[in-house]
Image 1 (cartoon, rainbow, N blue to C red):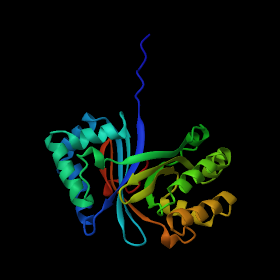
Image 2 (image 1 turned 30 degrees about the vertical axis):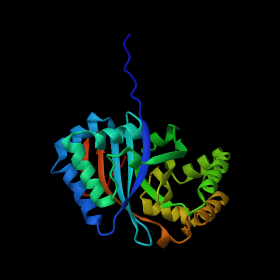
Image 3 (image 1 turned 180 degrees about the vertical axis):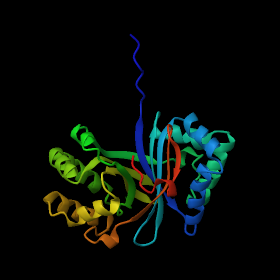
Length: 264
């Protein structure tokens, strides 16, 4: 009896800084990728094993901007990005040129590829969530870690995972169904990068987090301020996220305008 071969997937999220004055160029790139160069880009993603891609622009309270991306790939992120940007192909050269324009980073060079260290990966598997027909709304975000606080960040996450059952209950109480996080090491410092899938819009999730009185929420807000300098008790300090682009290997492209009511 012949069985269908399982497809290996790697889930990653990473950030790239957006240079001052280049937010418009960033938005234009994603519009062009899905419209002007849609067929070429679609084929290029599939050629190098990209299965799903989400791109967000994040604006911090101090007006710093980041491109934050989630990718599901059939090979490791490092090998996938080397294919997308590092090959002697027209599409690779186009991607490299445009990304370098709005981020200042040349992704065709191996030393510039994101260096990630996984902190945790949790995914809801209980069937009743599917029975409730929950929306699944994914979000990517990042926060810079204060100098000298990387090891403390890793220790905090390790300690938190020692109370995994409590965290799982808290995530379920807020209808979070996926929580994936990395530390990304860069020459400018280290960052936490997260991919979260919930049943509600981000604004509702933020409100729930900032108002939650659970001991673990209080600790998380306190540690966020200590490790990143961001006071998460005030919603004005939460980063602003805008969906730029959504693509997967079955549906194809969706721009932000096409994804107003978007779900996973």
